[in-house]
Image (cartoon, rainbow, N blue to C red; front, side, top):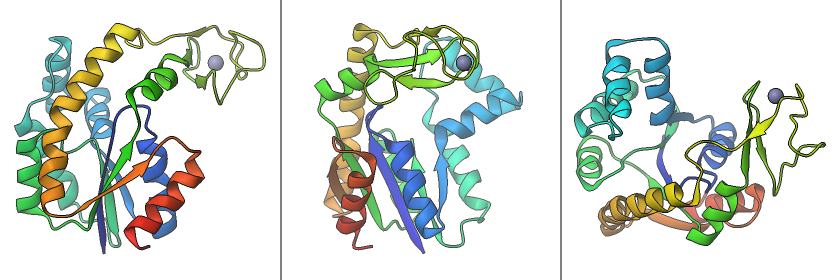
Length: 210
Ligand SMILES: [Zn+2]
């Protein structure tokens, strides 16, 4: 059984690294953001609460997040373990998690803020089919047009330098206490998230002794 938490700022490749690790070791990828999106799309009671919270520009509360994580982990479909992403987001959630589950490691994907800016501000999205592009690594064949459907590529509304700077401040403010709690238990492996995904994955496995 292997139980990991992956932490990193947006654009650090958390989803990609979690997916690669899960595929190799038959782990279940638990993305708290995806679970919330599922509830919103399927109009559950929780989805309605989450929608209201986000419409007010607030973060989903600790109680809701903990309930979602507890419920998801109680499904016990993770015979070989899991990689959880998007949780814990603050010190209180970290304490809850440590009280409830024994974990094997916390993967911290370390990406300097200027690299986050470069990656995030180069993201584009097809306005028609939703396909993701990245002007650094994943350029469309025709500038400004989707390779799949020819739709116009746009920037996400919240991918402005100002909005990103605010998200980074929030991230650092909340994540540092979480990392400090995990570091005291010697769970954290920090990995340089700047190289290509395969290199980052090799580094993760080596540091976790896999
Ligand atoms: Zn498209």
